[in-house]
Image (cartoon, rainbow, N blue to C red; front, side, top):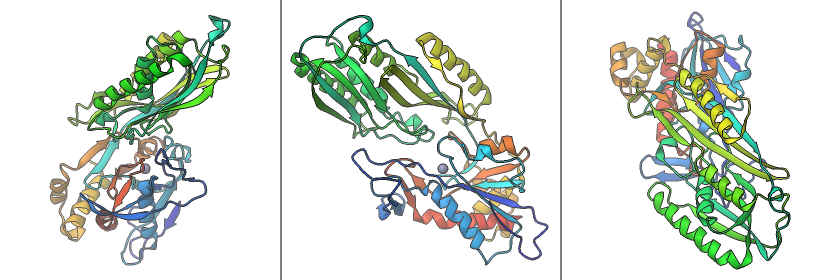
Length: 459
Ligand SMILES: [Zn+2]
């Protein structure tokens, strides 16, 4: 927290908090060896056909989420040209893994009643509420093949089969786009290819972060060497159908089949042929995607689930599948938790405690901060002084710009920690957040910053 006192004569004005997060999602292209721990982001200027000059990383996420919010807050702290009331700038950590940092704030940490969250991606909107979320992992101990067959004999080849380069994206912003889930894409081709051909599976590794739609997944299997050509053909045929299925929304998906070498699978560390096939069937049918649309905001997602991570470890054989469930309705969150427990019971999983569960931020339409933000936003886009914009003009200008997001934003936790506090979320324009094509559109930065100055002037 950095505080800046009011300028002379403005001490009586209500304090405003500007809040941003310091962490970023570290995602790189599948074939990149970039190390986020040791290397700075390699930024570059590009021309976006729609938005003009833009900043991007090179094969990695840029970190404009939420770097541009942090930069705007720092600029406010350095600002000398305007008069303003007391300012608080709050910089949080661990936002991306599920709003973990903000959740730990002491309840007397913020003095302001009004908080502008600087973590929006779309400069055409003002966010007035957002979905809550629940992160949970289901675990299942699996029996090794030795429980049904004492010894595997013959000539076997071990393969590593990988589906990679799915378009991925942010699980809040992109879940309705119907892109491939890398884990389920691999499960689909493996299910089809292992029908009629026995394979032994002993490892799966797919997906990365809780809010990223899985980009790739790899599975290690043994197949009888004489059946290898047929298995590969079936894999490629199944993959062709998958590609056709996702054409136009996910065009760069790849299949990679690597031969590890000839060896015999050990019966105590692989799944039986039947269990391997059934596991792919199970993974294909795990819930993923949009579950319900909003009744209040037509066409917007109310509830969704991101099946974001899957691992099968071999020693012992244990399957873990992890989910982020989001909903703008607190009631839906509760009923989903029961539904997921039932799913676990029905399929032999153990359901973990909910990790990073956070409540929904429910809109307050008569908020003072929202009124000021609407006038400030309208003034910044019409090159007017905020004092020249009436409340009616602000309301009219912003009527179609108010949104409830399908992502978790830090005000979710703040509504719980600081009852009575009012929030809005605004930002500059960022495309393809959380993916290696993330880009910040430069022309959106000045109106965003001017809106912040106008909000200060409106109080
Ligand atoms: Zn963010």
